[in-house]
Length: 142
Image (cartoon, rainbow, N blue to C red):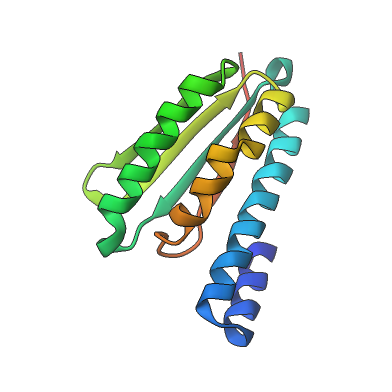
């Protein structure tokens, strides 16, 4: 069991669901930042690339998709160093989504992660999740 899962499991046993969701947001942010730092050391030319796979609660699909559509617009409007920022629904798994993100470098990723439009949207998106997201760092092989 990952550290993230252990912490979340412990928190669920001791705190109300709202407090757990708030702490999940903090933990997700920390995981994203630590993943991006790791990725920075292991990618071609400092590029930051990763995937996030997550499942959404059935009654939250429309809300989640609206939040994500706005997020993607915000990324492409405000982040010139976002090389790719795409979110797709998995075929035959209508509640599962995969993010693919790639930024020019650590500074570009950090700007995105700290942007007000991103930090305001994140808690609302986390409230739509059914379980923990799966984060994977990517590295170039060519």
